Amino acid sequence: MKRRSSYMKRYWQLYALLTLPIVYFLIFRYGPMYGVQIAFKDFNLFQGINGSEWIGLQAFREVFAMNDFYTTLRNTFMLNILDLIVSFPAPIILAIMLYEIRSKRFKKISQTILYIPHFISWVIIGGIVYQLFGTQSGMVNEVLRTLGFQAIPFLTEKNSWLITYLFAGVWQSAGWGTILYLAALTGVNRELFEAADVDGASRMRKIWHITLPSIRPTIVTLLILNLGNMVSIGFDRPYIIGNTAVREYSDVLSTFVYRIGLESGQYTLATVVGLFQAVVGLVFVLGSNYISKKVTGDGIL
Image (cartoon, rainbow, N blue to C red; front, side):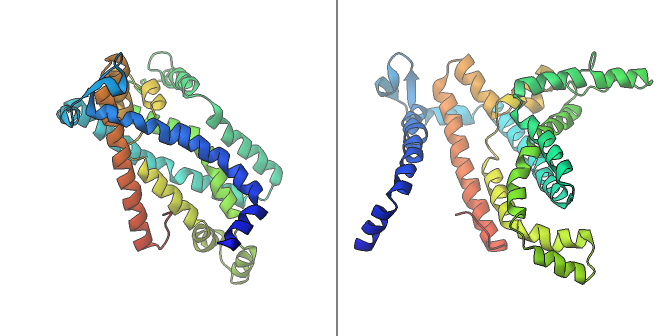
């Protein structure tokens, strides 16, 4: 006990710095959990949380009886799984490519170009997507028509919209995602590459047997975090790029919550969906972490 108190006195600056993030999480992360009880009440905006009547699991039964809920849940899983398949490997591939580049000047220019889309709002990206891929006035379709081809309904046909949606996601996030992998690659022992050169290993062999195994813990950690977000999905991207013509695919849980919560004023039902996402997300994180430990020995918990 004395050793612990002396350690705290010696490094009190570190503990003082730690108080700020702790206070932040208490206020902005744990504090709002008080509102979770809205899911179990017939919430009235004027009576407040405490004044609203308890209804138990009635709201849950109402949500689980909605066809729209299962449609949006299906779309959320579908878009997240496709994003995981398409978008998750992209920053890994980009990071390895950047790591293999020998010209520092070209590497810095490439990194800057790749990072920029991350700082652009999805509202602006949505405008760019419509300007490029619009059926009537999009630049891509204008070029296709000039070359004698038919216009492609990138934004009005479900399967074409899905490809456009995934492409926009990769373009916006892949460059920024390379930062973590490049940081992990800086810790790779260069002697391993030198030994591989002596053995006559090709560049692809070195990538497969040295580079990828070296960043495996980072890949596993990010994969687990991504699996935890399988039921959660950002509001901006599907709402801005989506439209009524492709609503069968673009309507997800976040847009569903927006419709029933803000547009219809059914705050209890919206809270139920949000609580459902949080619980299922926790189950996915714990489950994927457990499987990862069993299969690869790596985990985050």
